[in-house]
Image (cartoon, rainbow, N blue to C red):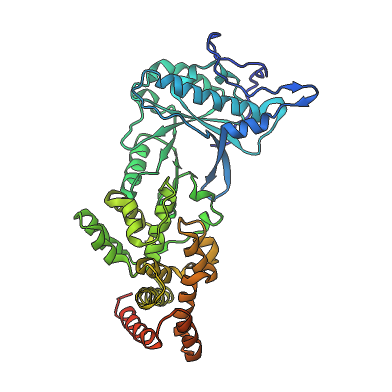
Length: 451
């Protein structure tokens, strides 16, 4: 997506507000209107219609910004009006480019808009500023590429950046081979194998630049970086430390064992038992579920996270994780043992306390209570973005509430300060004898866990 010089296109007049067909009054431009000496709320209207997604290069620097409709109408591709509905979305994107570049405006970064190939017939395409516009073309099942070849050749000769949006197993039409050499792949629902096979196939077809779209998780970004893709876009890429992440410290042999269990269609409860003692593995699971899930369902246990992914999603995640992981260091292993011990101790004490607590939730609290030490980042930056309850977050981050008090009790057992242990045990309505027995059992289990 290298910057190109302008081609001297004539400016589009501000009062253009209809499609080429005068009878169609679909809005295609947010008008810059002056009313009684006061300027219209053009910028606010545009912001309500469109949102922006940053596109990053290999080094993590911003290279462009995609404009996207905030709301896309839900329709199937075989609906009679599907093309008209998509054309309406695309017309709004054209308007966004005009609004951000009219009257000599210079956007900080180039603007990418993803449009249906049939929208190339729209008259507004001729007015898009070449120095600021990147066109990502989507090919439908019946795209009719041949009829748009003259327009594509013209746009390329004028210096426009054109790329294709490609889905899994999609091949570039023969008519476009050697002409369009940039492709964008949607990684949202792809496994590591899917991404690798797509990249290999596209390279064999002569594609020179491949960009990853909808990168929603650390595992996906690492896989795409290892495959040397040329650019990245997605929610995870927007996180402050996205391009500073190292390989994930999770035992690869454990991930392979989990993949084998998923391939054998084992029950989710069996899979949970295979991974529940590894705090880093569980954190990556919850984080992955958090990033790819479109709902706001909170997670309060490992089982709930697995239920949201199901076997298909779990297999996809594990394949990504396997290619993004490295065996834990000795320092990491020591923290993992401590986290496992905390989880077991909180789970056991929740059953002894007179206060009502969910043992599975308490286990997860203990397991994730050392995430900041595992990842060397502040706890609030790691836990707050996750779809966990407010009580859960308050306990892990600030040791607040009854759960936070129980966590303080567990932490007191690690210091062996009897007076402090007795104090917290009494406040948690647990006998000191129960605390000591649970602590011994948890320590033995952690030391024999193989972490």
